[in-house]
Length: 162
Image (tube, rainbow, N blue to C red):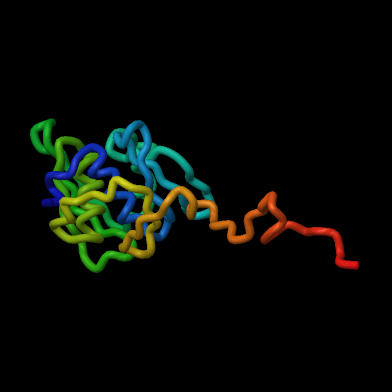
């Protein structure tokens, strides 16, 4: 999919994927309509909804990573952003119906280029650099290998032998 066409939850998802220095895990809430993340951004923990496409407060994590930002609105309905971000090799351009959308599209383009995969993983996933790995609910908090069992097997401490 062309980055210039990303919007809503798809844009939020790809922004989260671009924040691989911050985001550890991506998941969806509200019946899959909202992106949520877990991570730690420069000492500030984040665990919950991630909606930069509708909130400047959330989009601030992208603005904090800008090294150079040139923005302008065209005709009140379209905006253009030329930006250079931390970790990116060159300046990129983003366009959108608002300044926020243009900045976010430029950020995604700076990490993935002009196109991204059409398929979004609608499952809980761990971020490892720019790659993702699907994880289950069980592995989120760690796997417990030594589960106690009532029949006196693994994990059950019994009285010492005589």
